[in-house]
Length: 205
Image (tube, rainbow, N blue to C red; front, top):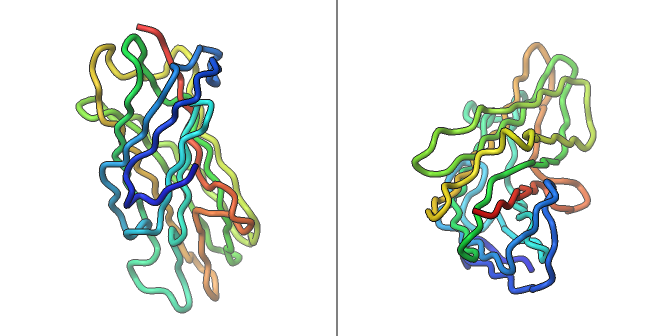
């Protein structure tokens, strides 16, 4: 089930009990509403969100999330970002956190150039998570993958009984360094597979 951000709503109604990456039972239903999308890496209509049928994750796919530097690029092209604000609806008696985030894309970096992916995720009204980054160095022309994971005892959960908005902020940067030609890094994959997946950790209150 995939919809553009313009629709701003996803509903899951599967009732088969399943578990998340921490082994905890997921609630019977989860609805993910995308409230806002902002950033140079995700102009209107260029990102899509889907929630998994087993209610253990949601995914974001981008079509224009590309940072570049060097020949043919503009001065502002070296950094692109995208911030999503989503609202989750689920049964009372549960709360959630993010246990893991998987990113993927394609990079073409000339010798001497470098690229970086960085992300953080937090609940409105609570302190942001530490930013986690992954750096790649040229020469490189291949798919890339990065995973941010949190130890089970360190996962930050929304307060029980409160419905906090969940924020995701992702960034790509490319530095030309002493390279020649054009270098770029894109948050997507050449085979059109899902580019970003966020794994829930569910907990009973």
